Image 1 (cartoon, rainbow, N blue to C red):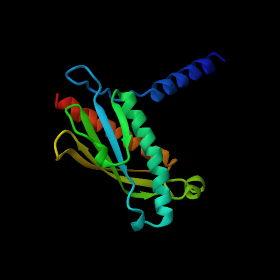
Image 2 (cartoon, rainbow, N blue to C red):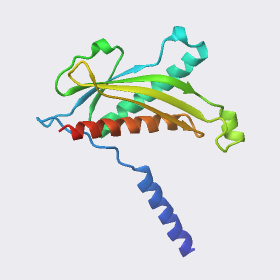
Image 3 (cartoon, one colour):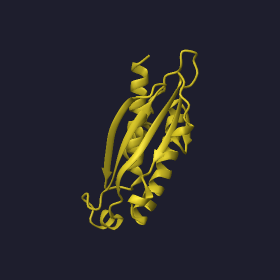
Image 4 (cartoon, rainbow, N blue to C red):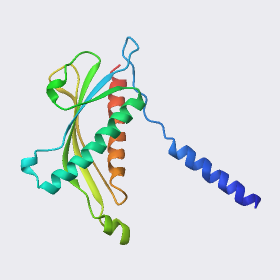
Length: 174
């Protein structure tokens, strides 16, 4: 019984530590204020997609946007979602992040559930552009993830990668 208690305590400790992974902490402006990041999500042109593809992109986009804004805020940024790139007004401590969904494959949840071993994997590829006060982007990159787990894992991984990359860039430029 004593061994069982010790094992359970160790398992709970590992779960607590693993579940509380730190998000990167945002740098502050010279004045000690939060850096503002405005996020624009480009889900694609509905005229170029099938109705089903666009429906999936709306679902993925809505979840991704909420999660990205929350992750940026938890990291210490002042994050806002905008519906048009034209709403971005550049100044020294404001940045624009454009997230473009390039391709999304929802995979097959039935194959993931019954077959396993990576069958029916979902995947998402995004293109990112990060702008400061200038007309040219500070960074441009592509990122993609696939998983045989639930599709929300993809978005969380991509958003974590994005916040980490932005924080590293802004910290290095200080």
